[in-house]
Image (cartoon, rainbow, N blue to C red; front, side, top):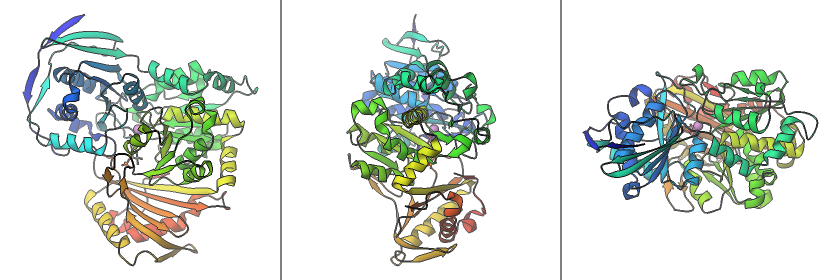
Length: 562
Ligand code: VG1
Ligand code: CO
């Protein structure tokens, strides 16, 4: 079926604040649905590609949250008017973030538009988001998003093919003629390409035998919680249909526009249902994902918690049990600055390069593109590899099941053995969500001034019978080893003589107000079986004292502890 359409130029005026944060632009749905708000941002995003946009292919899809489908259809109409040749759109607008990354790479697309606010709640009263990923499949770098922001302050009009007949509910290809030029929309199965990709990375036959119990006489008891986010469809196909797990192994697998009221952030607070269920002892592994499927939380039997920093280190240690790495080799590792440095120890032992980058997956891409990095992670429940350029929740669970299959051990035993070899990085993160922005900015400025003063290094702080001496303190700056681009002011960091660290930064993914993140990390070579909350208490108290957080924010307790 071929239809026609005419490009219309619509006058508009700029909106303030269309500045993408850590990972795209995130605002309340009510902000995105203001007249021309989404249109402006999409037009600027397309324009930021310059001449390359003409005749290009783009991928469009999102996590199925409220306003996703409408936004996807709007993007089709705007892209049609801007010289794009072809759009690959997930059915009903649904694609997980890792699936978008995979599709961009497999189709050699110019990029993709991801409709998600990730781990932020959805629904008419909550958040929506738009993110652009470039041709390597990863989130656009700072220079690109700064360009989008600049364009958004100058925009005068956008282009649209109004009334283009589109049905993204049905898989199939539709050809159009827009002002005499061809334009194609291919609506694709949301899941198929991604599942094929996972099959090329892992040994599904082996995993199936392990999950079903064929290989060791004992089926793997798993509980996978999609938290009503986008992973539901992927989880059902992979874990039930391909790996043969029982239906009861998966829950909350229908993507809902408001995530059924859940806060789709896989941590001990928001995935409490999973934690409580697995705590009863009937499962070998529990896992949860965020709204758009790039985050993962792994827990073992009786809800034994694996910190994301440890998860990264364990996967690094066993990487060669995964066929993809047997074939492609193991290159360097990386973590974001606030992530505990457990993976560094594995890298050192294996003789691999290890990189420390700012928070946000966009900083890993260049290193992967030049082959210096094959596995990386963030403390915020992100783990991934160079198979794509996003973190990948389902990939991480498949990696963990591969490690369990290979070792024949429980998750707790795998961790304990890891700590006995490498020592343990105790880690915790305190989040203070929805604080007022002004006092938080003041707190950060004051703290930066204090910790960068000439006499701060060398100072000692004591609490709970422990004393820590400051070795170095700064606001983290990063120079990309590949393109030499510089990212400044990426988080306040105090490093002590024994390697323990206090890190503090403001979140760049919230939609309003400020979220303060306080990260505490402390290494023990021998004393590896302690309780993190007890071990880290002295450092937490010291961090609160140095930052004067209670005074500035008025908060006496964090909203989330992980
Ligand atoms: C948070 C995490 C960061 C992660 C980012 C995007 O950013 O800390 O590690 O990359 O979210 O994850 P911030 O700026 O709020 O600390 V996702 O799953 O929300 O795309
Ligand atoms: Co996410």
